[in-house]
Length: 197
Length: 305
Image (cartoon, rainbow over all chains, first blue to last red; front, top):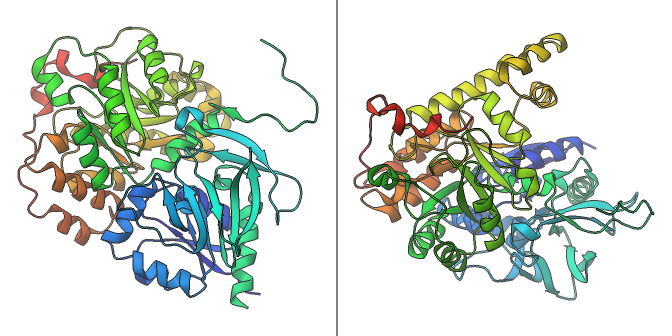
C-alpha cells in the first residue's frame, strides 16, 4: 500500500511536532494553510495551539468552509487539545464567536483541567493503542463533557473523557506529539490508509 | 522530602514538569503575544487572534518615557486581565526578583517573563526557575545567554531586542546571533564542543544538545521592537517561532487593525501578498527611536548576565 499524505493544519500551534510524529509513523506529512493544500491531503491533523486563534485564522483565510466540507465528506481527521476543540460539535467556555469544524457529536469544555499551573502528565490507557498505556501530556487541556451515541470513548482520566473517536474522526485532550511515543499517530495513519482503500 | 514510591502502581499525575512547561510554549508557536495594560486592551488582543497576552502596568515605551524603577504590576490589574480573557496570560517579574515571581505564580499566570524591561533586582543572579510550577520565558542576545537561562529553568526563550523603541534592528541582531552560533555548533566535532561550552559560558550538556538538535531545546520567539506586520514576518523568516509585540500595537494609531494585521503576517510570514494586504491602511505606526542614539544606561538588552 502506498504512503498516505497527511496534512497538519498550520495556521498556528505545535505543527512541527505533529509533522515529525507522522513521518515516524510512515506518512508523508506536510503543513496545510491554504484550501489548495487541503485538497491534496488524504487526512489531516489539527494540532495543539490556541483554539480561538486557530478558529479566527481559519475564518479570515477562507479555510473554515473547505475544512468543514472535507470533514463532512469523510476525510480522516485527528485533533489534539485545541484540535479536539475544533472537532467538537459544541464547546463550553469558548468565545461566543468561536467557530468549530464539528465532526464529533460531543460537547467539549475548553481549559477544563485548569490553567498552566494545573497542566500535568499522566499515563493513559487508550483503547485501540496496543502495548500499554500512553504518556499523556495535558496542557491547559479540554475534556469531553458529553458524547452522542455514535461516539466511542477511547480513554478517560480522573473520570473525564480525554480521547474519542467517531467514524473517521479522532480526538485527544492530550499531546502525543510532545512525547517520543507515536502509537496514537500510527493509529491515525492506519485510519487514513483504511479510508483510502 | 519523601522518597518516590518504586511500586508498579501508575504514577500520580505530575504538574510543573519540564515537558509540560516547554510544551506550553510549543502551543504558542506561530502566534503573537501582545503587551496589554488594561482588560479592554486584553480583549482587543484576544479578538485580533493573539495566542496570549502579557499583562503589565506600562508598555516599554512608557517605561522609557517615565524613567524610575519599573516593577511587577499590581495583582489587581493582572487578575483583571486574567478574568477578561480566555487565552493564556503572562506577566513580568524583575530579573532575580524571585519573590515577584512567587507572587505571579500564586496569581495563576500561565507564564512568567523574567524581563530586562523591568529594573533588575539582582545584578548577578537570575531567579532559579526550576523552583516554580509556572514556566518562565527569558530574553537573550546570544546563544550563551539563552543556554544559561535554560540551565536556570527557562522553558522558552525570546530575543531581547530593544523594547519600547519600535525599532527591530536589535531583535534582528540577537536572532541572527543565536542562529549563527547554533549553525557553528553544528559543524563542531565532539572534541570542540567542550571548548565551545567554555566559550559560550554554558553547560556542556546543553551545548551538546543544541549541536545535535540544530535548534534550542525550547521554543524561540522574537521580542523587542516589532511594530509592523512586515517586522513580524521578518522575525519569523529569520527563524523566530512566534513574536512578542510590546508597545507596537497599543502605541499605534489604530490598535485594533494593527493587532489583527500582525497576527495575519505572522501566520503567512512567507507570503508577501498576504503581508502586503495586512500592511494596508493601518494608520500611524508607533514613533520609533534610533537605537544608536540611546545612551548606554537606557539599553535594556544589556540587562541580564
